[in-house]
Length: 174
Image 1 (cartoon, rainbow, N blue to C red):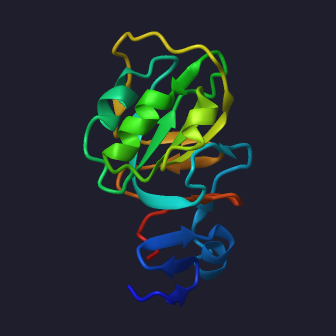
Image 2: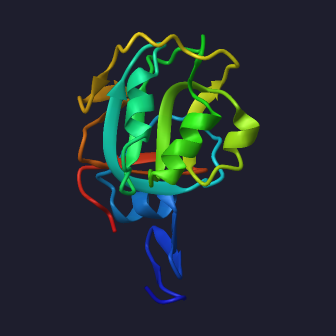
């Protein structure tokens, strides 16, 4: 990719591509838009990739397993039921996800260690923060359709996120 490539929905410089969700919505009106309420916590505030889903409630065992695997530029969408009673992601799992090539995580729930995650080269959006970790009961589902924020997330579809919001598409947009 050349240094000054520009296209609708993305700005590219060398190897960095910045997602611009308003432009993507204009160019691809069929995308689904997640209801507002998520905040950016990671050092990378715009990201996108193929969706991997995790459904868990107050148990991040499956999240822990998945961040230990190669992310291949994908985005993990974690349906934590919107719980604000503990955190599904902390600094150690975020650092592992970044080092294993995950583009980012969307957490329908809370994270912790926000100051460290803010310096971790990973996209992270969540509802908020909570200092308590989860119980580890090895409970959760991987790669099933999950629904929150008015959108159903399917494994294999694509997600793009920035400070303007989160959008989902059945196909890669770039």
